[in-house]
Image (cartoon, rainbow, N blue to C red; front, side, top):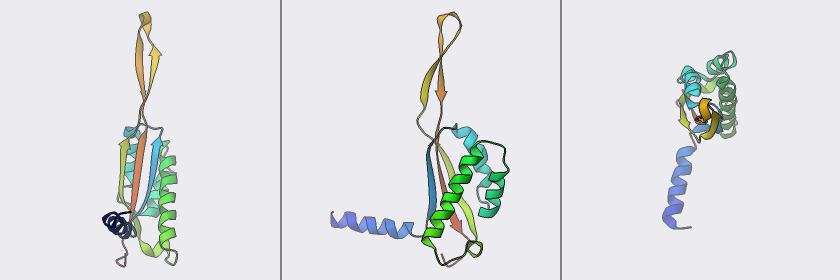
Length: 134
């Protein structure tokens, strides 16, 4: 491995040391439906966000709740000695991008066919900490 590549990799690793994130790739929900739920928890404390997702009737909230728990687990892996309640974790960023589309055909009257686009999405969730030590 080249010297510059190694230095860049070390710099990236140093930056990511204080970033706690989780990604959900290829979730079979339309991005528009997922964004409705993601907007509810953006900027909210983690405990409150988990309650919002738990009691939200939309199906997208189930996947987002799992993703949130994964991000919390990633935070715990990097901060084993700290307590979650003292850290003041909140949803710093959450964004939903569209993923690949499955294209299907549905039969229509008079020998025609309509294209059905089955959409999917990628969700990225980044946690921030109110604690000034991080």
